[in-house]
Image (cartoon, rainbow, N blue to C red; front, side, top):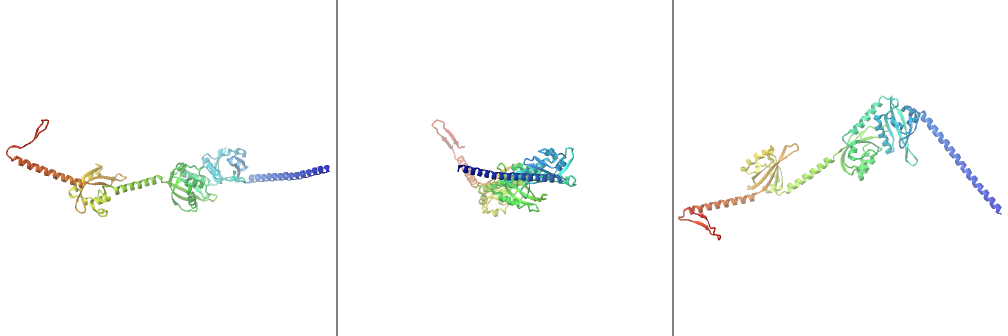
Length: 463
């Protein structure tokens, strides 16, 4: 019995082993078949790339060349091995290298495609014009692993050099523009931003490789609203003013930009392109706001001042502006006074006093002058004033109008008149007393006795 169990166990083990071996054999055969298919695909790929008349290459994600076909070597004037790794970079024409690398950097940042024309400088010194087109390669998880592209010799195209010069000239013009400029495609790729854009915002091209990166950084919570406005630009066929927007810079400062956009020619792959330009109006708007605040402060002081304030023309002497206190002082309404001149409300005896000094202020000989002058109220009574006059000049230094500060001194003048009248009456009374005393026979005198024996005669009549 025990032997039977052992034998059954051994048979079962052999059966399991046989099944496992058959599975392993099938897996090995599958792997060999996959390897054969892979080798066949590689051979077909190699045959295909060797048969085409354009250069074919593959780069890893760091732009290291890991494959180049024979035609690619012919275009470079080198063997495929000599352009392996980063060797291909040194054969880009020096004058084109910055632009080419700028395109590659944008592709790296956006995992997008590249299509551009540029020059190669062969080892023998000859220059070759090429059309370089490349697309991204992704793994099964959607991660960038490299690029595959083609290189076409276009040196025999008579317009190639002209097109390149035109594009390069346009790029240099954008870069040198004294105002912020960005060029962007409808898929969101930021094709170019100029140096002024970077100087003001602090964002380099690498920071905002896509329009969405710009709206996120610059507009914060408003990014979706602005993004929708930008998306609506690509169908444009004419220049459009987009209005003013507040953008946030890399340092957190906020600037006010006035945008306008214009459509450009589509790219070779059909994508529509727009150039957006901005005028930084921050300082202007802040100055305008400060001016408005200053004017409001001035109007508040002008309206609430406890003295009369008057703006008048030096030429016509017509009143330009006046505050409520001045109207109150003269008993006129504002509308009534605005129909009058300075001379209309000035006492006739004082009119000749103000004209010479007013001319001196206009000529810049004096900065201001002060007069005690009389105004005629609406009821015909006289208002005495202490009036100071200065000139308000424009940005060109020319006089715009005069500003008068009028203080009512009628009560003071009345007291002065009453005091003068009392003094005159006292002098008259004293004179009458002296005349009377002078005609009295004998002597009349006034004597002061003091306790310290310093007695003094303070008056003695002529007699």
